[in-house]
Image 1: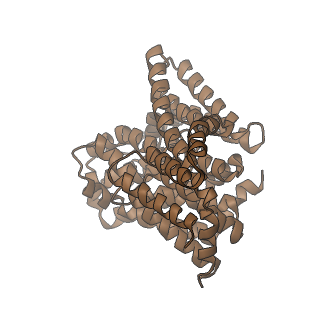
Image 2: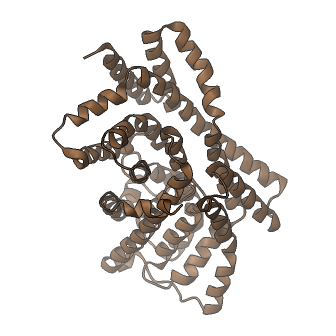
Image 3: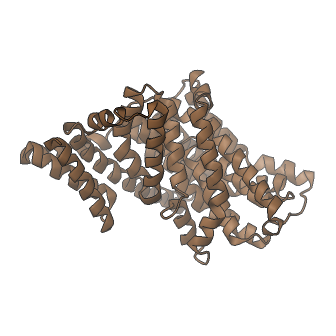
Amino acid sequence: MTQNTIVALSAFVGLFALMAVRVPIGIGMAVMGVAGYWYLSGRVPALSLLAQSPIRNVTDWDLGIIPMFILMGAFATAAGMSRELFRASNAWLGHRRGGLAMATVTACAGFAAINGSSVATAATMTQVALPEMRKAGYQDGLATGVIAAGGTLGIMIPPSVVFALYGVLTETDISKLLIAGVIPGLLGAFMYLIAVQIVGFFRPELMPRGPVAPWSERIASLKDIWATVVLFFFVMGGMYMGLFTATEAAAMGASGAFIIGALRGRMTAKIVMECLVSSVRTSAAIFTIVIGAFVFGYLLVITQAAQNFSAFLLTLPLGPYGILTLILLMYILLGAVMDELAMILLTVPIVFEVVVTSLGFDPIWFGVIIVMVVALGMILPPIGMNVFVINSIAKDVPLQRIYRGVTPFILMDFIRLALLVMFPALSLFLPSRM
């Protein structure tokens, strides 16, 4: 084992040790990256890396997509779009067995189309949908499980912060990545609806039927969601037709959401300031992880960790899909115990070398697979981020009950992952038309 390999492995061990004592992941990656770089290259290069890397990375034009999509979601929430989506979905689906749960999934998919965060989608829909499902007699575990699963659509259906990070890390076209998530995201929503129907068939007492909404109410509900539809097609359509870059589309989306809220009289100075502050806080947390990951990444570059890992995997008698399966299993295990953004930033530069460069898989397709596995990790025990977010809002619902409620949707996600691996066209059809 070479010195570089020992340093790289020691850095990973040190990083996990820092995580175990609750050091923020971004700080931990920066500390271990600088320490390893210092050991191999000396004090001056290491301190120079620490001084220059944050400025160079934070001012990257492509990373501007992250705060813009977050701000777009904040303005959309303030404009009341999430409640309108739920009301419309409930008007059309609420009278069916499991109708409120189906309405929640549909509303999550709609809100995901104007909000690039899984956690934000889960938190917003918990406040909107959970009281209604409780009022209708839904069991708490199932109600919260539906919301946790529906929240994962927030990073698959564009706009998506995770797709943007993957694109920056791998220098893959972000616009094509975002468009690639449309069909897999809609497939996920459809499969969640099937899961609700299956649970409702075997356990009808968990999800009673609601009243039938008159046609006048259904038609009126469609008028309420025009803003969401217009905003989504404005942003995604502009990218698909080549009118905007991904970063420009994110900025246009944030502006569009603000204008819609202003036309509705909801953008008071106080609300605008709250949206800006919350977006800055969220973006700062993400950029802290990004900076730490890039510092750590420089250590991986000089130790040739990606090349060594690739060479090791290629010696295994597994074949391309066997190696891919092994990598996906690694991601599923990491996703259960590690922050999703940190996992992406830490591992993608290494596994991309194996999957795309060495094995020849399509980088856009692999990006969809990675985001799918990350979404799965957000509802897997013991550290499913969406589950913890919902528990922080609905404190009277134990974590174990939420995990039981989300189990049918986890099974559907594994099926969806298998479909995306077996049929790459599900991910590549729309990008190929751009």
